[in-house]
Length: 115
Image (cartoon, rainbow, N blue to C red; front, side, top):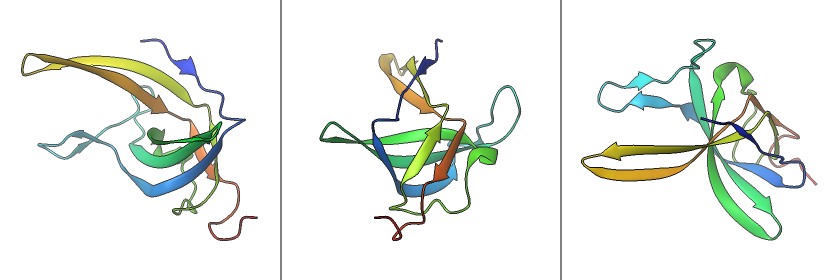
């Protein structure tokens, strides 16, 4: 699967929900890990604002790339963000979509302290 670089420099990105562990298997509760490093992954839900439109995105990030101060409302920088298309078959039905991944998410300023 090709990782497509996502340029977020012209967008405003804000934390919508705090980071939560990315669950690989809901039945067992197994947490997803980075295939290369073995570091656990977390999901961060962000508001992605660009050209007058807002999109709610969930971005997978290694735990080591998450800042401690990621609270809802905090403006953030997304480092190394990529998009990947995916497709799977479940119960005979094909589904597809786009997933997002970043190397790191860091707060530009604490929530409530931004101009």
